[in-house]
Amino acid sequence: MVTSGKPGAQVTTYAQPPMPAAELQPRLRPRSRTAADQRVGVMRLYYTGASPENLKRARQHAPSHSHGYGWTPAKMTPHDAPYFLDNGAFTDHFDADAWVETVERALIEMPRSPDFLVLPDVYGAAEATIQRHREWLYDRSMGVGSGQCMRYWVLQPGLPIPEQFEAIEGCQGVFVGGTTRWKRAHAAEIVRLADEHDLRTHVGCPGGANGLVWAYRQGFDSADTTTVFQNQYWHYLDRLEEATAETQPIEPERAAEQASIDGWA
Image (cartoon, rainbow, N blue to C red):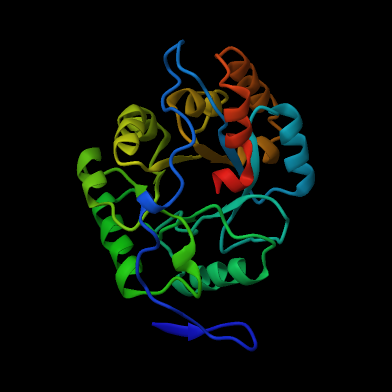
């Protein structure tokens, strides 16, 4: 238990799971877009370390989709737009104190709360990731107010996908980590199982010139990338928009609901 808060008020939070997925809003769109007759919706794209100008340009290249920031303990800037918080565990090193500080800063200093938090994981190791997730869900606090945020469970190589899904608890979505080859090999199974478990899906750095198109067609709810703005590869977004235009659009009122930040987050 941790007791803290803004001046004049105290807030008590526990290292326990947030609201179960059933109490959150239902999934906003149908799943896989691999079949030609599937109706499609909005995918949210997050750009790690981007600027407002980057985000503005991204919207121009892919106006059919939603855009936001990806922040980590290494960098978080108070821009007023959707974002998610990554834990920064991109290698064997993970700074737990920096992670907790980042979550608390986000909930106090940022203009809005994050769309979701990525639970601390162990890169490339599913079993160790499960152990670390449970530690942060039940034995450690991620900061004051973090229990009200959506949390994503990380899937990594090392265990069968169904076994990893059976281990999921206290989360409302899954974050697909691992190598690009591993993601591509298991994406269809992951999206299918996530749908069965009523979980949202996010794929980290799908990679390649057609990576975002691939993520979109697989049916992921969101994806993140650094390549587009770091290398000025805006044609990646052009390809995504072209792929979107080739699919059958959903009903206008449904599209408006899916594009809504309030409806998505």
